[in-house]
Image (cartoon, rainbow, N blue to C red; front, top):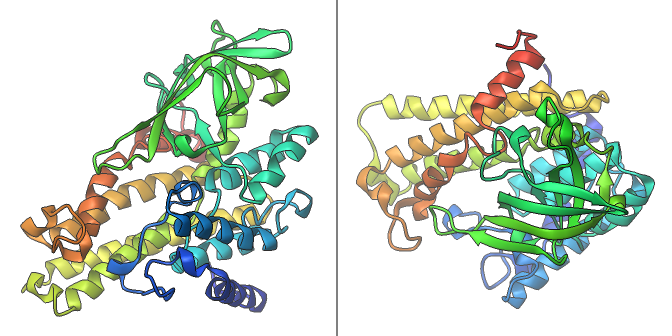
Length: 411
């Protein structure tokens, strides 16, 4: 396939690059003089959902100013219709926009709301739900988290037990969710609940609800991971009253709504650019005066790096193929599971390759203590442990590919 930009796409790519140079807030940059260094050890990590409520005024105001700048263009939710705050971009233009934001190492805004919930509401939501929720997401004013996984229902999502019982015009929700990304910073949650405990097969008794995070009976507790970070949380629902008007799709048919959301989750470009930049940073570091002490006499390690680069290019082409189908008006299908599977396993291989370069020094943990490449690959190796079950375990992805992509019979 020929992935070269058309003249119009190349012009749009340059427009995005110029926009980032001109509009990314100085207060949100890593260093104190407002000039963003391109050295990886100087590039500060961003978490826009956390930054927008940070106690650091520069961080907080920078995050909000960046959201406002993107919202002016409709670029928080670029593929949405303009009437809901989007830019009406094509799928390929949205791909180019996200690619260039990632290459510039600046944060995307409102990812879960803009790229998961929003497209799902556009497919399954009522006009009232779209009007109530989409503009706030597109302005960067309202954030969302995904309440799907439970302690006994992660990859086997159909086993979920959080229950919703209808009481007139409301559902009363009781149960627990876990591993909810950025839930402690969310204003709203989209949640799968069981409304028919006797349904067979099990996925037919599930309903998709929109729940306000501050509603009475909702308790959110952050979870600390292996790195000491808190990217996830657990959420408890005790007698939470959710209006029936907040149901997306039909009662007991929420599984099909959720599959739309998961299709969008698995089809992105972000991981590709992140891996490419990490590998580029590794090679540049090993060629530097400081990194030469880790040089190897044999060529086996260079061949391993070459394999990782080849795999990253394969992942990029998978993402381009997926977006080309979206451009043709098709929703992501099993191709999104191919992307998710390949990306997750590449994450782990890349982390091992990077850590291998530094031998025992690759175990140094604290950034700034003399650890090679600022402990980037030490942290990546820990982060990669969960890669093959986040967003759906590799076994589940293979089942999806086998049954929906290859039309193989179920065992």
